[in-house]
Length: 443
Image (cartoon, rainbow, N blue to C red; front, top):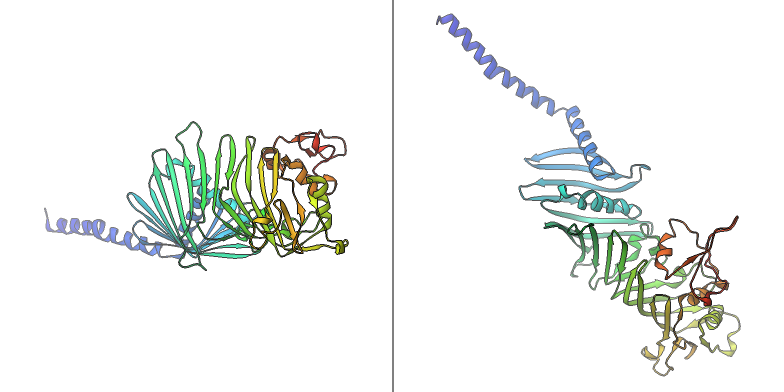
């Protein structure tokens, strides 16, 4: 080969084997360093995450600090239709391994009113997708805060494990409130079982000896708001959902510092004070059985005489009011009541004589005031409808037959719905002749 030809071939090899690849590499590096390319990757990640988890995801910046490691900065989760904020995270670091995936969340914040979307992300978009739960996942979150209108609650450390076991997916969460340092962590277990014909989900909360504020869930569960801002929950809550419906078990749990004036704010009788409710058994299976028993203790409040007279006429209480009481509300020393509800049958028993310093009272006293018992129950079984009539004048409280009140139709023992008349609202009545013409009404 001629020397000139050799030089030409060498130049061509240099150009195509060295100069062109080097130039392409420099061009690729230059493009990937531009803000345009970063925005392109960020928008692609936002679209992918929004499609996968079902909420709108906004990301401030995206980084790849190491192979198989992705870092998202300034993440916001928004409700797709209204744009309301579901939560935000300062930084998310996601590391992918051969057998384990690791996720670290820095300073996550959640809105109590939007916890339904958080549950959908965890349950519907993750636990219910077999292709996403084939390997172990570990997640650590620091300073998780749940915001609600009544205040905020921060958890110092949150650790989560997700383990696939045969046909089951087990998720375990440990967390400790920031104000508690030496207590055992609160544990939440979620089990998705696919072994049967239909898949089922079981959710269990173990608070141990730690009192959890109910206000943290007040925006998600409006019923919690009726317990008062200082109400707390201690014990175990178990909830199960399958093809037949849902069921709840609160056996062995208790609610403390319940504000009776908030709980009964729509009742036409006055009853104030702080109460503690201990649930020895609490199994609610709509359409099957309702089995609830426990005690209620209250002190430091006032009770209306109209409520006492209503309890006398509807529940058969023996009332012994002080002569100088007049028509005013009475300050009581203690309300102590044991309740037992099984199906439509309700049994109430006064236990003031079992309280310290009140052993001198007779058995059956429900309300103690002025050093004596002013209300005593005979302790005979009766219909739960009698208790409803005792709190509402003439037993009337309107409950619209709607999606919001649908759970009531399932939980109440053997309810009956009156036919809809022109210009009238459907109403619920309890079984048995003891209910008479009374109805439950609420606007």
